[in-house]
Image: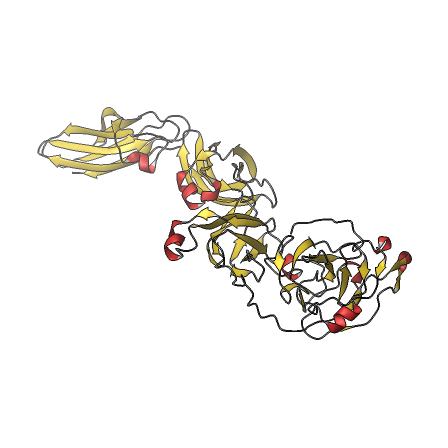
Amino acid sequence: MPVTIMIVAVLFPVLASPARADEIRPIRFPIEGRSRFSNDFGAPRSGGRSHQGNDIFASKLQQVVAVVDAKISLARLDSSGNAGNIVVLRDAQGWEYSYMHLNNDSPGTDDGANMAEWAMAPGLRQGSRVVAGQPIAYVGDSGNAEGTAPHLHFEIHAPDDSVLNPFESLQAASREPFANNHPGAASPAGSIDLVDRAPGGIRISGWSIDPDTTGPVTVMAYPNGRWGGEAKASKERGDLATAYPTSGSRHGFSMLVPVSDPGRVTTCVYGANVEAGLAGRLGCPSLDVAVNPFGSIDQVDRQPGGVNVSGWVIDPDVAESTDVHVYVDGAFAGSSGGAIERSDVASAFPAYGSAHGFSLDLTVSEGFHVMCAYGINVASGQNSLIGCRWIMNTTDPWSNLDRAERQGSVITVAGWATDPDTRAPVPLHTYLDGIHVGLAGADIPRPDLPAAYPRYGERHGFGFDLPVNSAPHTVCVYAINEGPGHNTLVGCRTV
């Protein structure tokens, strides 16, 4: 809620202007429903002050209404000080009507949370025009009224700033129900089309039209009842011109509503009346808001010397990249800036862009390991676990004998072999009926292998022919290890 500080007698009664001779102002009574008041104008107060208005006692959250057609000259949402939350109306003749101690509590409590939606009527702010009888606020106990019965402190100031005892005006005040049938009374309509998490808060988009004018509506948001800002509904929306041809197309809006705390946030959005009158509620969508980084470990790939871990991470408070720290068996193993372009992430989270991918090479010894990745928090919140993976790190060659087929006097052998310690082709030893018959290398391109082992390339296939006689034979192929580890059997076939 915009905060305006106006140093006048209303806020500082010790500096009060001289009292004006009793006069009856034609007003609407300022509270809807049952209330009680007395002529306590001028009563002594602490610090040598005197009471500059009348206290009207009523139930907390009872509706407070405009006493005249006027403009809101001051709207202060600050429950500290003597007056607490305050609204001041100024009519066309310069008379001012002050409402003090407006509500600062959540419904059913005395918590002092001071939520804007329960202090002033939604859709109103400093500068708004109102008509007599229109709801503008709620009875409360803010300021130095805390600890007393809920009431409205009401003052009337003349154009020369002299103070009028409001008692007789209140006694004579009209109590006609608010009809909302004045010119320009129709409330704005509209829709919320999109609600999504965005850096710094919640992005809300939609449209709003005031049927009484082609001008833009001011849209106001209240996340969990608090003031969340405003925006002009003036963006181009071609679909609106078709649906509302007399209103034009420039009635779209998109606004960032600041949110810093995690949890479910219900944001009520109102279109403020362009003329004097009630706001139109566009909707109250809810969204579960996270403040800790989130993301995914997409892949863990074996590579020479260890593994490569890759994925993405976003800190919901910022659009910038987020660091990732990786631990293996509980020990810090490395970090990444998390700034690799990921178009798929941008498609899923358009408010954050694409620079949120990470890729990190880790040195890992042979055996079973637990690898965990954490997103490092930037703003509110804390570091969070992105995910953990089991790693089985072997040093012996991987391989497969795809076929060993006999055609006449020739056995054709084919397959592949990879040594996890190197990207180089693996040497092969071949045995026929237990007798070593030759050396070969697994260096034939195999385009299918990078899909399973992306860090080793495709030149790990083998294929060769063995001449044989007509008797059955057993063919065995071994992959010869390089570095730590052991030679491994690729496979045996009897053909």
